[in-house]
Length: 130
Image (cartoon, rainbow, N blue to C red):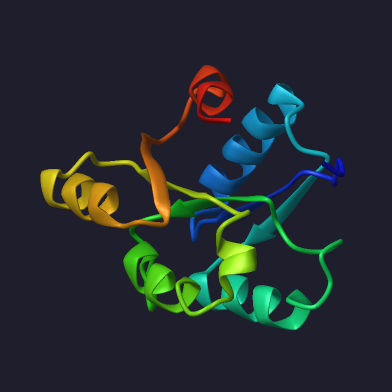
């Protein structure tokens, strides 16, 4: 198996959460690169632009649930239209500041979501996932 660069895409509309989570991710040293997107739309544009370039694609996505315009679940509706070769190699973990039971159920029911993490997530939780 080739060892490819591990990249995480962090999708969150809250700048403070982005800074905190990016810092937590860099502390884990699990990823060589962090792709920061401040909306689901920005993330989809990035993915569409780089679909043919594996060296730019994330290998893991951390997705905030509650965002204006396009929430995390709407992002996933678009995400599932990408090729399986991409979605199979890029799992998604959702982030939420409120552990709303409905969100938990929706996240767990989504085949692309491996876990729902409470914000701010702990580096240990992230390590355990990967």
